[in-house]
Image (cartoon, rainbow, N blue to C red; front, side, top):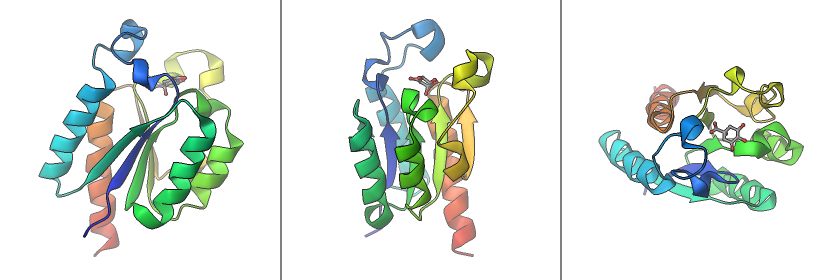
Length: 149
Ligand code: DQA
């Protein structure tokens, strides 16, 4: 049985749809999750979408990905800009990591320009709203295809 790609979401992303829609759009996390499952099916991938407001839980899921996932797509939200623990976990997880942000963090406050996730990521997608997750799935499928060549 192929392992799923973990799509991990950090704090306040459970509020999508109502949270600052001018920045994050009108889509809910459930909408994004449904779109991801559909796109994953088309790409012959399986996905598991999770969200937490706790830093430690995010770290535990990244650790779990090492043995139970074929890749990690992560929007660590605010922990992106603060969490050395998350960086350490991602560096040790030994599966491809793609960092996603709904907003273009580089157009925003300077504290959002620093990412503790990026040094552990294969690549970063930001500024495309919920569609960024679908681009990340396409990138993950391409990474897997290259690995299996
Ligand atoms: C975010 C950007 C972060 O700076 C912010 O803290 C978030 C969401 C995004 O998806 O654009 O919560 O990761």
